[in-house]
Length: 210
Image (cartoon, rainbow, N blue to C red; front, side, top):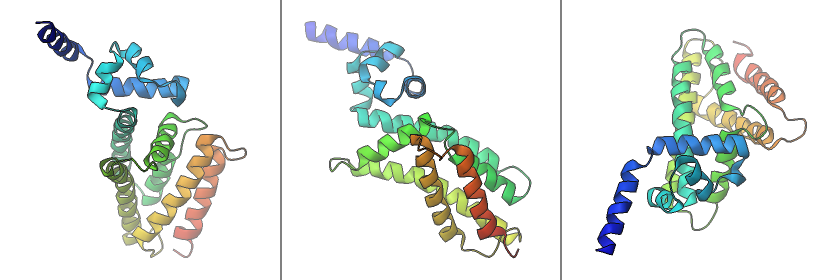
């Protein structure tokens, strides 16, 4: 009877638990307000009214929690990216909007802080292939949208006749480098400086001789 009662209690707790999206949103808010180091299962549980055990039931490990939170945040960014890229107007204006969305807002930007932690944890030999595949899916979405936008600009004569896929690969590598510098607060590498360098690169690489 005790076992049955315990199972019933656990079932009720899960039923009354907040939606997973609320848990992920709270995790992101905690990263923004307190930093990633303060995001523990116990602290998150207190915020959402769940025990650490129940959180582990949902997410299994902290690595999975972080990856799910990143996927949730990327879903919101993806929706914003789709809205920006679907807007009317020159491809260059939409490319500028893509770049601004890609780069961190500043030092300790919560999304990039989380991204860097997930990247770091994925280097662990024990990281499973499913997690790596999910990270690659996030990267792939950004890449495909950028390549499609570049192809559109080339076809409309706004950009030089570059290979969209190759140029997208180089541009994202540049963006990642600047984004890391901004997110970690490297001296002299603020968001404004990064945007200036990227815009100069785009002007030289896409607009020269158009």
